[in-house]
Length: 540
Image 1 (cartoon, rainbow, N blue to C red):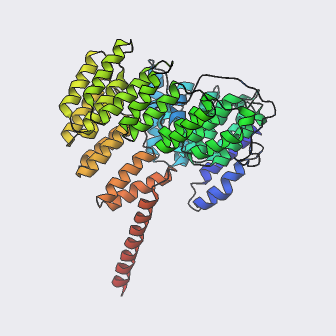
Image 2: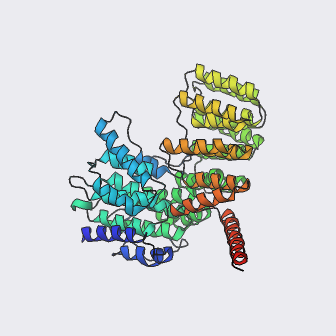
Image 3: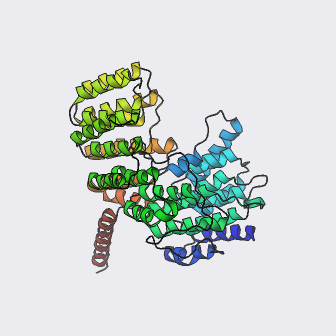
């Protein structure tokens, strides 16, 4: 049955590329048929009702919610956690096999039928490291990733590990292919290729919860929480906090707060649970008003406010440029018995620098060091970013040099601050060269920033240069990359190029910006009318 299910998924994926096969049929008829067992999808709950697990276990774990925006993770975390390989020297066979697989994917020009046929003939020996590396390179193209995943799983002497299933589920979830992701989870429940005990664990379902939360499908996220017991997994306090964190992380903070309050008799109210909600309002939504409401709710209910709580409020007021409130919270905290940590100091330093009080920020750095807390890269970023934003370049460079003298390694955010202040292509490339020289690898955000700048300056040769460099460096264009490129081309009147990449984006299953999509569609229809009128005139 397991092999039959895999063959069915593979055949249907290939069938989707047939010239008589439309996308509507594909998504409404074919993919739902892959789900042969829907037991993993229980009825939808209402977030207004308490979740009462049958075997409630109370246990505590270390706090996972972070207090500042610096600590908040990128939307691709599921992939970073499961895809990034440990740094080590691979042998020549690995490099050769990787290059061959990469060439097959590129030469096939996203045609999954061709990819599958070429993979069958390539003679590559599949290894766990190879699968991880390939999936990391194609994680923004779910069809290519899924085609490779299915092929790799059928090779003799190889079986997908838990890590690889998580990779693929995360990729499918990001592209909203939830039915296909559940198919893999059902396969994992049967022990994968070799059978045996279930491979499904809490992290498996947490990936799905996060992906549903990302598309604001709160009911499905909670639905997945209910599914834990169907896989023999407990739903205790730790799992409940994971659910709240996932909802808040993707701006479903009101729903998370309602869920917390409706389940207070079951899971209780604690500093950690309130901190998750507080972090959501303060750092995800960025609402000082709502943050303050939760702050006083904690006080009224007698919930202890810890260093995380204070850090959330300081971060929130800092973002909204309310430096007086930052100092007020900071002074209040100093009167308590809570030990100030480096995150608190960094938040206050950033708030002071943003409001123009750079010297006061420097004084606070000295005070921090006197108390035995030494600045880190984020401390210096807290100074460099506001200085670059206010175009105080010489001062920013001075702080940067001091950072290097202390032996601290600049982060991507350090260089992004300087990129943001660059005024021409030469300056931007100079910063990029320095970034590469210092071993700080450019990220998607780096290239997106450069694409936006070059588009604004009308430097399209440089746009294509950084776009191609991004791909060469193993960063497959994600949704944000395409949106930046399409928007930049569209706003500069390069409509044909914009439409080309708009279509490429949709083929990969990435959602375009609705406004730009509507405008490009109107342009396409207008061009069709012009072509039709020309054809009519020539015939007459």
